[in-house]
Image (cartoon, rainbow, N blue to C red; front, side, top):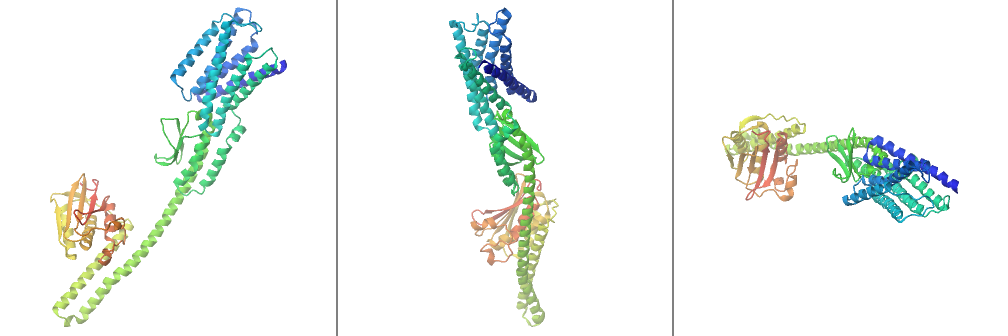
Amino acid sequence: MRQAVEFFGIVNLVLFAAIAGVCMRQWRRERAVTALWATLAFVTLAWVLVASRLLPTDPENLAEKVLQRVDLAILLLFPYLLYRFAVAFEPGSRPLARVVDALSATLVTATLVLPSVPADGEAWPWWFVVYAVAFVVHWSVLLTIVAVRLWRAARDEASVARKRMRMLAFASSALTAALVFSLAVGDEGSVGELLVALLATLSGVAFLLGFAPPSSLRLLWRRPEQNRMQDAIGELMSATSVDDVAARVLPPMASMVGARGISLESRDGTRLGAYGAIDETAGDVAQWEFPFGRLVVRTSTFAPFFGDEERKLLTSLGSLTGLALDRARLFTQERAAREALVRADDLKSQFVALAAHELRSPVGAIYGLSETIAERGGGLAPERLEELQSMLTTQIRRLVELVEQLLDLSRLDAEAVVIRPQRVRVRDRLEQIVHSVSPLESVPIGLEVDASLEAELDVDALDRIVSNLILNACRYGEPPVLVSAAMEHGALRVTVHDHGPGVPAEFVPQLFDRFARGAVSAVSPGTGLGLAIARSYARAHSGEVSYRPGAPHGAAFELILPASAAA
């Protein structure tokens, strides 16, 4: 039995010395305060184990007695240093910290000033019993706090970090049990002493696995997240959009590193997707830079120490995510191009149908009228001839308007409209537009514009926009039609207001669509292109055309040219 106790004593010395070396290596690599407290704790414990084998059991001279007191004081520091390691991640309450500091300092001082330390087999005086109880309570309470804090905090961590933290919690509990059992141990070499040695060995193994688990054990612990991540990587190949990529890869990423929040951002800072909540004031926030942008991860304060390897895996996963994002963008571009081709084909079909239908009517009328005038003009009464010539003129104007609209559409679709702003007097230009439109429609058109108003704008674009708005008001509204213009907040606003019934609410969403014609416009002349052309020219001019119900009734169409275009 004695040999077994001696064997486990050597094993324990090697174990705790190895733990001290592991902690010291991690501290030298990261220079983190948590690693420093762990290093100090296990260096002190290794020192005590070495000293216990070198110092005599019953010191005789003063030097040996002093070393014995120092050894006891250092042993008292171990639970305190391990407690400081545990609270360094998430500081506890200040009152508790002050009490722990005060009790630890008091016990260390009491150890150094003890009158004597009873030898083996010697009766303990009452003051040493009090000291021994305080010693055990100090160890038990601090190591219990360490075990509880690590165990509770591990609940929200990833698998590897959770098991490492719970290994440390178990090791702290086993070491506390070894100390308590040591008080009840009988003679040297007894079964009780062997049990204490075994508990210490079990604690040492658990501490070593908590601080430096081997790679094979990490892989075993990480298997749930690894399986989920492999499934996510497989699904990435079928992701068809950026949102789809983020939705498939971010949850398993967060699970692997125990992240409270993780977001995917482009290089300009635009958030492509997120999982959980990113709060830079809480937890540990880290960023990983990639060619596509970056990953922003918020984990707990325990993750950098216990999940260092898992966090490194994000680098390779981020690279795969970048490839998936590139693929998704290409797929999106391809789909957009395909949809654009479909829309273009639809527009072409609509254009052909419109040209066949709308051109046939005026061309046929022009042909018939011109043939009638040519063949029978000499035998017709002057009044009848004048009527036929008026009808011919109307159809020619309708044909010219239609051709101009079709040409406008082709230029806008080809983005061949060039905006060349120049300074003009707004009222003079609007008067010209009104006069050019008035002969086409027998509707009175009023004008309310300050004669001194000037603006920087493209004359041709203004003509196209306002003439279409006026024609629309004349055909589908009711007189009078009023054109007004003013400068408001640095923007030029031109409003065309009629006093008709207005636009039905259900038709407003389609009002500016090409070929869109409501129930009223369907029985009126027109192609359904005027408002679409007006808005397209306005947007080419960095402006906008919008509709609102008139007051008290009617329809009001407003052209807005921003400060960059209007002076």
